[in-house]
Length: 149
Image 1 (spheres, rainbow, N blue to C red):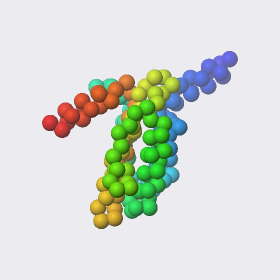
Image 2 (cartoon, one colour):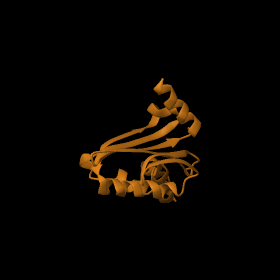
Image 3 (cartoon, helix red, strand yellow):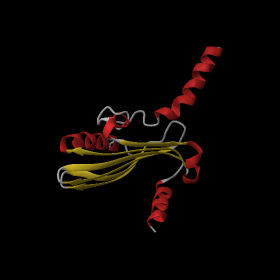
Image 4 (cartoon, helix red, strand yellow):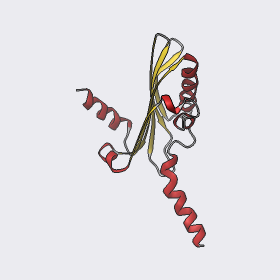
């Protein structure tokens, strides 16, 4: 019985480590799509995010050529298929902006995937952000609008 309780506790405590589990972009964050050497990765968890009603913030920024960008674009589009709500913008045939509200976690937390890309002279500058917490879309919009002013 102690082993079962210990195993259950380990699973619950480890759950935040797998915040993107079940998402196609998990491969991107794990460095299986784009070389981690060219990515700037930021991960913030815990109390620093409480004022924003979040418990997880993960972001990636990188520059890639067209072929690599297309691989990333496909992952974002695949994850958008499971969205509860989404805003997506294209320039030509390429996705350049997305805010995706993903299904909630099993504990009821909201999850968001944000994507922005721009091309200049054949090089794509890409930012991907994963957010998880009690924040709503309205909370996030309010937060970003305050920073713009």
